[in-house]
Length: 336
Ligand code: ATP
Ligand code: MG
Image (cartoon, rainbow, N blue to C red):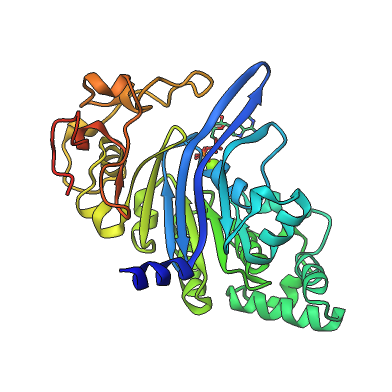
């Protein structure tokens, strides 16, 4: 057991522990993440799913050290390759993350510099990070374009972002994200803004690159179908809290949390009845409900749910934060 634990520890790339983040909004404080823990091992794909406003991007930006100024971390740790980046000076933390983690965003064009040729955007990054000549960087950038299956890469090198289609712009951003060989890629809704056929191609590309490069990935999506063919583990986030976490087969074959079941039903997956058509919307995170944050919308809410946030009483690697699965106070469902 001790050997297994040591092996797992060695393989751990990212360990986010009890992370809480608030945004200041006028004189209010929005609780975007509350005691969120997730871990990613080398080469693993962890999907983070949840509806709009559940805190997915906040989590990604926090890991990347890119939180905007109204955000503040009120507690928690982000341990990257054994070092807590939150206890480092910001510039050092950014450097540490920059060398290991890269991010791909939902709106690719807004992350490209509109007045600079896309090829130069990549070659300049390469020149800085790898200390190579302009000529070498250009040839490497063209090679990267080829790798992300951009047709006619020599020509596209000289395009400006507005000359690219959505799919091409996302491929260029992916090329930039893999340029320095990251150990972890955070893909935040990487296909949401693209046409359906292009979505499938870009997902396929991400899958191929991830396998080739043995890169770990946090795949953020509001749609369980998107993550089904790619993730090893799935974490569902609801209103800034983890609702459930398990392997893909745990989550897709037997989701336990009523919110995960609602997401499955909304994605047209699973054999779930109408009980799981939950109406309403996320609570006001400036004033979140006490107890379980899902309780106001939950078809199974009962007495303890409004009183106290549920704890995980399952195994370490399978988590369900729901009173229905709580041995002490809940209705005694199996929590073995
Ligand atoms: P989506 O699926 O729409 O991208 P998300 O799950 O990524 O949503 P976040 O963008 O992380 O959710 O937002 C979580 C909460 O934090 C929301 O209540 C949102 O309004 C709030 N929030 C996010 N960014 C800011 C900001 N810059 N200033 C204030 N509040 C913010
Ligand atoms: Mg988002």
